[in-house]
Amino acid sequence: MKTFTGIPASSGLAIGKALVYAEDENSEIPRFSITRAEISSEWKRLQKALAKAVSELTALHERAGREMNREQADIFQAHLLMLEDDEFHGQLKEGLKKNLKNIEWVVENICGEMRQKLMALPDPIFRERAVDIADVSHRIIHCLYPAAQTRSVLAELNEDVILVAHDLMPSDTLTLDKSRVKGIALDEGSGTCHTAILARAFNIPAVLGLSLVSREVKNGEMIALNGSTGTVTVNPDRQTVESQENERKIQNKQIDELSALRELPAETTDGRRVTLKANIGLPEEAAGALHYGAEGIGLYRSEFLFIGPGRDAGEEIQFLAYSQVLKIMGKLPVTIRTVDLGGDKVIPGFQTTSEKNPLLGWRAIRLSLASPELFKVQLRAILRAGVSGNARIMFPMISGIEEVEQALALLDEARAECVKKGQPCAETIETGVMIEIPSAAAIADILAEKSAFFSIGTNDLIQYSLAVDRGNEKVGYLGDYHHPAVLRFLRHTIDAAHKQGIKAAMCGELAGDPSATALLLGLGLDEFSMTASAIPRIKKIIRGTSLESCKKLAAEALNGRSIAEVRAVVQAWTADSEKIP
Image (cartoon, rainbow, N blue to C red):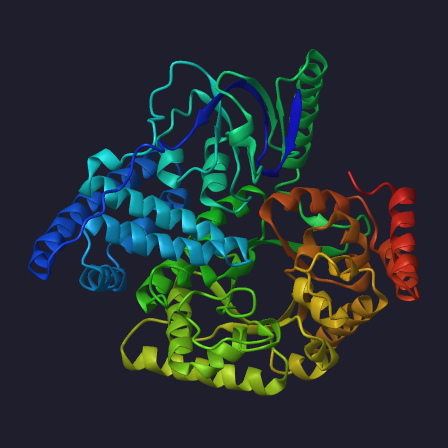
């Protein structure tokens, strides 16, 4: 018996035989030289292959629309957009002329470079898009050279299996026999990748990010998979099997209890009502937010639009992506963060300068203000989409009032341009700022004068306040929200918002941390925005406590002189009140 631990991506339990789904290492893409006179014929071959690939993907998109909701189906719409992207075509044509190699090799070479650059980035959202590029490139190559099909077919299976693989592409996941695949275990992936999204849509338990599981497991071995805890046990003994069956019963009971909270308000026992919203990074996540009872989208990350083959997303592509979420959410508010590129989210080809300290450099609102025409493309897209729902705009990494004023001026220009073109757009739209830099927290009273709301980004606020690189394992442990300085910044920001009559929200990871819920309530936080699946648990905590006790906790924590003292206060309160389910 051997146990692997990974990322819990789709909840549920499954026990069954392993089916190891591997690439055929004997299948190679041909590579040969061509003459300049043959460029035209190779390009024509590509055009025919692209047309065939578009036809196949259109069929997959339609099938996904029948079997899932539109949000999951639009994963394949994104693949279609890549196939039809003019800049992608331009890169292929340039590669063909420069390398004078057959078009199959050119497609694999260019897409391979794109995947490698994305995989090298620290942000998992960007790395996950490499899978989409791989899916599209494999489809094109197969249309050009059918012998390059490297995967076995999962559409027809003759027995129930736990699917084990290094990775799965979205088209693999869609076409698998969902009646036979009882669980998914992958070396790669995260809880926000397309495989995870589709697994949740199909209610298939999944554990991703297991590193070496596909190499360690053999076909036919028994596997016990727990998609809630992120564990995969190979050749489980009887005790493990019985334990998992008991856990299944407990889990089903908890699901029923939390589901019952969906329509109930997030209200303390003494009447304090707060708002729980969801953070999303892809349009298809919006439906899941509603499923978990989200009262809106507190953070709609727009970076996914900028990680395709081109340098930037066009206005129409952005308009459709924003409109899609707004229509799904109806009258509920959707807060769209303007693009937060730079720092640890560098898009290959988007930035031309190297920086010694990128996290302190040309990123987020700074990059947007330095590229006003590109920034206005995004602002126009949001304004136009705003007629479909309740859109709000949030500016990231604000350090001073000057940046807010410049951003608002460009927003006015963008609105005027929409009106001049005769494009319907939101006449008014709420704008707020993210508080994630110490300077912003220190002058929160000034920023509040130009803001309709605050949203605290605790990931960066903790990092910048404590001078701790959260990606550095040697100092990462210092990035602790229990630090007195962090608590004082939170209190000052929330108080400044309330004094100006606006709400203070939080969209950082801390908002979804059950250990921090009571403390944040006591500090006066109005809105919590988190991963959608965390909402029921946070709501249960809120509904089981009183605001008065939370205020006492916050007051005591604010008197703490060290991380250890504050942590002790929070842990003691948790132990005494038993508020964490």
